[in-house]
Image 1 (spheres, helix red, strand yellow):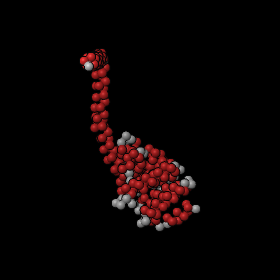
Image 2 (cartoon, one colour):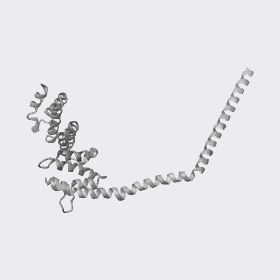
Image 3 (spheres, one colour):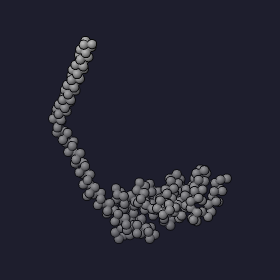
Image 4 (cartoon, helix red, strand yellow):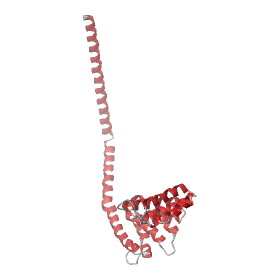
Length: 251
C-alpha cells in the first residue's frame, strides 16, 4: 500500500514538472513572438507610420470632399432641378428639356453637369420623360436617358413616373423591363395608399404588364395579374371590363 502511494506521488510530481515546463516553453514562445513583433515594428516603423498616416489622410479627405464638394453640389443641383420640375409639372416639356434661356439650362444639361448627385440622376429620368411627352415622342432618346437613370433611389420618383418608364421600355421593345417597371409602379402606388390599394395607377399599370405578358405568350402569368385586378381593385375603372381579358387569356 505504501509502495502504491509513492508511485502515485511520483507520477503527480512528473505531471506537475511537465506542466511547469510546458508553461515555461509557452511563455518563452510568447516572449519570442513579442520580441519579433517589436523588432519588426522597429525595423519597419517609418513604413508602418506612413501607411497609418495615409489611411488617416484618406478618411479625412473623404470627409472634406463630402462636406465641401458633394453636399454643396447636391444642394445646388436640387435647386436647379426644382425649376425644371416646375416646367414639367405645368406640361411645358420643351422648356423642361432644353431650358428657358433665363438661367435654367434644361434637364439634359443638369444631368450632365451634376452627374455625381442624386438630383443629376433624377434629371436623367425627367429628360427621358420629356422626350416621351413630346407631340411626336422620341422613344429612342427617352430610352437613352432612362438607361442612365439609376432606380436605386426609388423614393425619389412617383409611381406615375415608374409607369412612364414602363411605357418607354415597351416602346423600345424591352418588354421584360417594361413588365418589371409596371409591376413596380403598382407596388409603389399601393404602398402609398391608405388601405394599400390604389385604384387609379396600380390596376392600369398591372393591366399593361399583363397585356405584354400575353404578347410574349406567358398566358398563365397574365391570367394571375388579371385575376388580381378583379379581386383587389373592385372600385377601379379597370375592373369594369377585366372579365373580357380573363376570358381572352383563358382560351
